[in-house]
Image (cartoon, rainbow, N blue to C red; front, side):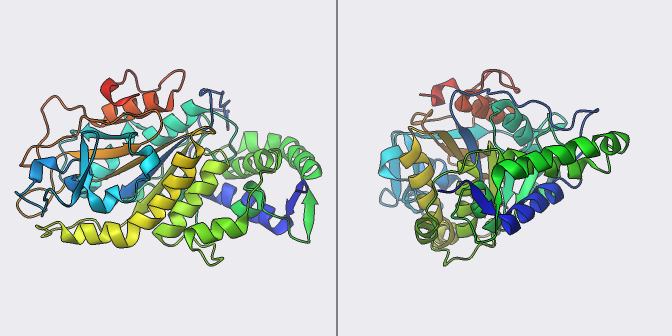
Length: 400
C-alpha cells in the first residue's frame, strides 16, 4: 500500500481533532504532556453505555429465576458463574465466554444526572481521561466518544496530561487518514505533510504560548494531525469492514451499528478509551424484562457481537481490548424503576469468569461492594498499566 492518504481526509481529520477539543482546559504551559508506554501491548477500554439504566438480568440474572423480570432457567446462559440473559449472551462469541466478569458498583444514586456524573469521575477529574493517559501509547486520539460529542449528561471533561475527549461523528476521515484505506487520486505525501505540520507548530508556538486558552484547540489539532501522518499505514480492507458491520458505505456515526464500527476504527488507530452511548434505557414499567430483551436483541446484539468477534476474540494475540457494558443504575423491583447500584459486564482477555456484582432478589448488593472508584481501580488493573492512577484493585478475583 502506498504511503499516502487523501488530502481531503487529512483536512477533515485535522478539523475534527481541533474542533473536538473545544471546551477542554489544558494545565499550565504543557499542551500535550508525554504519554509514556505504560502498557506492554496496545490496550483499549471500550465502554458501551446504556443511557438510562441497565437491568440486572444482563449482569447477573440468577437472583430472579422464576421470581421476577421474566427470568427462567431457559432464557439465561451460565458463563462460569456469571449468569446473564440470553439476549446479551448471544452477543458474546464462544471463544471469549471464559473471559466474562461482572463488576459491582455501589454508588447509592437513584437520579440520572448524579449517577451519570459520578460513574465517570475520580475525585474532580475525568476517570476515562486519567485511564487513557496512564495507558500511554502512540495513538493520535487517545480518548474518543463515537456518535456523540460528550460523556453522559453532557460532561465535557478537562484534558489530563494532554489527553482530551475527541468526538467521532463521521468515519470517513478516520478510514482515509488513520486506518490506512486506499488513497484517493488527490493524495499528499505523508513525510512531507508531517514536516509541514512541524513547521506550523514552530511558527505558531509563540502566539499559542501568549494565548494558551483560546488557541489550545489549534495546538491539539496540529499535534493530532502530526501523530496521524507520522504513523505507518495499516493494512485495512474497507469493503470487508463495510460488510462486517452492514454499513452500506455510510460513514456517519448515527446508530449503534455505526458506533461499534467507529469503535473498531479507533481501537485499530491506537485509542486507549472509547465510549459508545445508546439511549432509551430508562425502562419504567418493564416488569417482565421483555422490553429490554427486545432492545438488546434488535439494537445491540449483532453490532456488539461483530465488534467482540473482530476486536476481542480475533485479536487477543495483538492487543488487549476490554469491553465494559453498564448504565446509570440497575432497575428496581417491582416496577423497573431506579436502583441505587449497578454492575458492569466486562469482557476481555485479562479477566476470568467471576462476579462481585451479584444482586439479591430485591436487586440489592452486599454492603461491602466497592463504589465507583473501585470500578476504575479494577479497569486500571485489567489494562495492566504500570502505575494505576486510581490505586489498588478491590476486585482481584475477577482477573485471570
